[in-house]
Image (cartoon, rainbow, N blue to C red; front, side, top):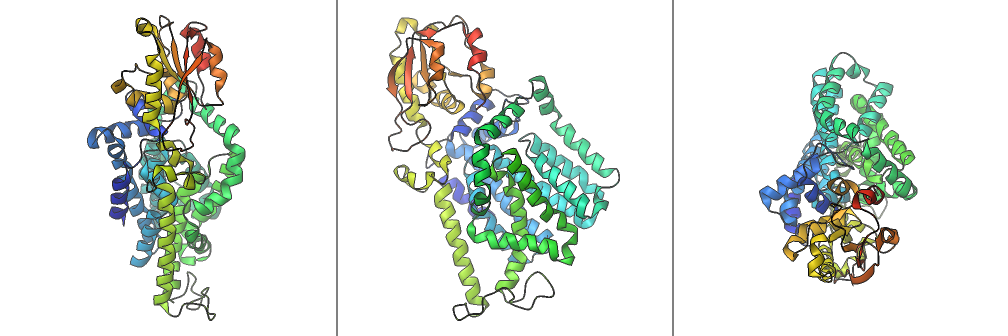
Length: 501
């Protein structure tokens, strides 16, 4: 199953183009550092490595995410085994992971959440091994996995910050005693220290970005949190992970894993209060799904549920319309599972022609962000052509956000464009232009963000972006403006042009 999902992801990887975040990561990988304004260094470095090993196009960049997805599929299966699942339960866990919307979405593109999912699952599996065996020597391994996760994203702190108190509340508390937890903490801090040092030296910009996400998207995130918990995996899998929670709370044989079931609602509460994105809780929900696979298999086989007191077939419908016998139950469940996976594939992967993307982008908007970047570069080239040749050595190309700047960095050189500048995220750290570049400014920005024009003189629209497929995204119909120059030296303007969201 892991090989199958990885193969499918590689085959579909190049059907559209880069995502805006991938273009940013490619640019960041060309500016290696221990940290960036909005993230630690691991994802850009992984992107640079994947492009170097497998090719610089979308397919080459996405081979690594496909392999990570295969590893995640295996880890969910291993988690099911750690929680007592047999072969069928392990296979069901692998199928559930491979067909879930969140896993497919993160496996298709190189995103920070791609490696974050792998890291959370690894930490969770190691934590379960620690809780089951009571062997404190697993703590350094947990610390190492958490430390590497911190080099990619800080969200693993949510996992640790909810699971540890949950275990402290419901046990087994012996796992938190002794010197080994401190050893794990030291390992994690030692691995993450370079990025922590970078963030401290630069004023903790990641906290600024996180605050901006909460302020800007917090109300929508809170409103959509519960629906997304049902949809990010698959509605078909809701009974499985609900059964997983029930099993961890009620099965005496899994009393040692009860803290995981308690940690999930605590994690959800923290994310909702903070206004975080609903997918932050998804890795732990996959762990609960793995816990529910064995009782699901038992029910489908007519062998009873998770609890020893339940009779065979408990919880299954026995009316006239119910399937007769385990075989038919399995067929019906497999059909629903396959249907849910197929729907998730259509929503998250590039299987539709681009012109049909509006059918799914209202659910998953990131699909639209893979269309139109070469066309944007072509529109900016049209604007650059309007700059008098004798003034081009003093001209600047400026983009409003990192997606646009990343696209111009990727496609611009072959079109004869100079390197782009932007005040967005870490692109601001790679600028500003030299003050001697006081000539024309070719400016591209999405509609609705016209305030940036106030920093330049005599701006006029010379081109507009058209992705050619009628796909509505942030850059569709964005104007390309030609301005006479900046209103002040770049060194003065740059702090005002810098923005984090």
